[in-house]
Figure (cartoon, one colour):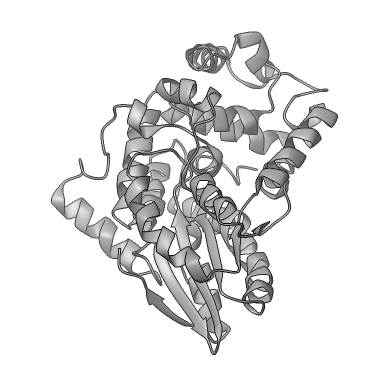
Length: 332
């Protein structure tokens, strides 16, 4: 069973990591592609609904939802985005985000009370699930990120895959608590006494990874090892696409990267991507809609969440359109 091979490894860090692009130097892998390949990538991205843009306005009668697609990693370019968002908060009744500080505190408590959440408490350790060469490479990459090999050996494979997606150059900022756009928007709301609520339970994303089988998890960390030596490149690529309003490009680009994984067939690639989009994106999008609608009935709402959730036929924008909302982009 190889459902999460490759794709989980690439997207675990994209969805959950926190690294400072400003502290890292890397190469934009999309910009480095030949012109024809870039054009093909853009065409595939643009074939999806609402593929471009991070700031959106949704209206249904008197109900208004302002939507901000966020980039979870710190970056100095967030200042320009915040300058656009700040005036919008004047008439907002509440802010909805993926996780508030309260949810984050609950998650920390859960981790403290449930060691098995991220640590192997029974069964083979990570070094016993990988080949000798794979374990040597993982140990080296873990140590570059300040994680001793004996600790890495006890981490659940899915969690180790997330850590491998973080560039070593950014670990200092991570430890110091440097945060991305989501937290900066929350700070704006709190300074204005705007209530901040969560779109989902505190353990939603971690539960998704926690439900994987041991085989799925092992394949996930193997896939992460394939890109562990160039996370700076992936970080820069993601950041540049986001600030150009083209996060959907990263999804399509990751398809291309995944196609190069050993043993990956076109049929397997389609199956894995459909599954990953369903589990990590679509199900969450669908669960968020009732929360958004309920909040909008109480007054204008600002919702901020990962930019990848905006686009697609079952993205948040398309789902709101299906509920009768008129969708239009805000100038960026």
